[in-house]
Amino acid sequence: MPSDPTAEAEARLAAVLAEVTELDLAIEALSVELDAFGRLYEKRLATPFAELDLAERLVRRIQGLEDEMARLAEGLRSGEV
Image (cartoon, rainbow, N blue to C red; front, side, top):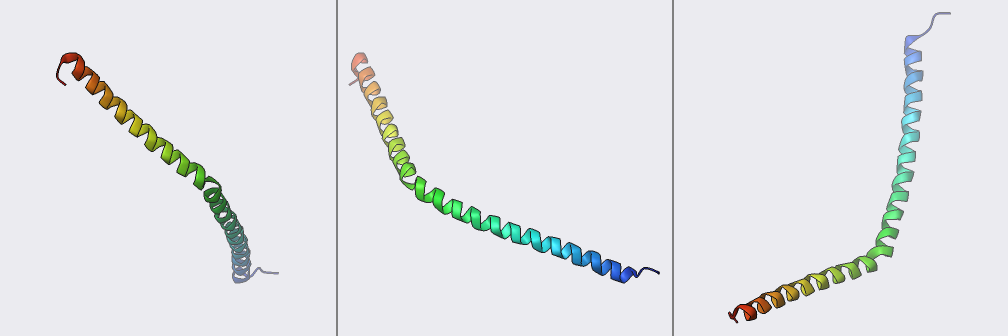
């Protein structure tokens, strides 16, 4: 029996489309999971990140004060202040 090239091409196309549809559904499921993870990540880490930001600002402020104290101390030693 001779093969029908059109029927074979349609069958391959149908198989590829089925695979693409399956992959699309898998990607959609992963996207939903990633979105849920992102929301949970932000919820759980919002407070620690805010505290970290405050701590970093405090460190910068202390470093600025230390630098100013060092400058003043040097000025006192050299008689410039």
